[in-house]
Image (cartoon, rainbow, N blue to C red; front, side):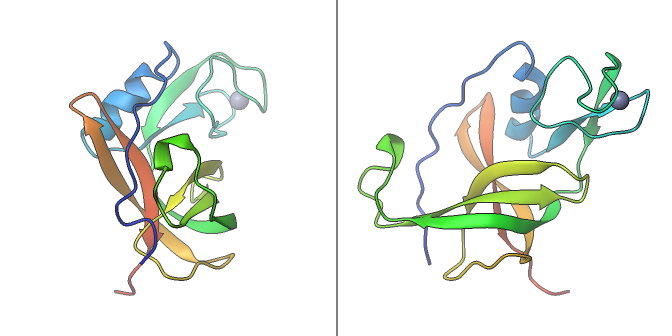
Length: 137
Ligand SMILES: [Zn+2]
C-alpha cells in the first residue's frame, strides 16, 4: 500500500472554510451548493462560480467520486517528509466538483477509478478528506 501512514497536517482555516473543516472532524463532507442555480462549488467561497449568486448552502456530499487525474509523488512535500511515495489526485465528486486530495489504501490508481472518502483526523477540529478505492458491494 502507498500512503497508508500519511501525516495529517493542520489545514488553513478561513471564514469561508471553517464550517467545512468542523464537519470533517465529524466525518462529514460538505460542499457549498448554489440556491439560485443548483451548481455545486469547489473550493468554498462566497459567490457561485456559475451564476454569481451569493446564496450558497452547505450540502452533504455522498463522499463518492472517481479519480479524474493523479500522480505518484516520490519526492515528498515537506509535511510528508520520510514517506517513500504517495498518490496526489483530483477526485471528481458525484456533485460535479474536482477536489485535490490523496488516494490512500491503494497500490495502483487509474483515471476513472471509483473512490470513497475517508477522513484522516488532524485534531478535534478537523480531519483531512482523502479517498480510497471503492470496494464493490
Ligand atoms: Zn449559481
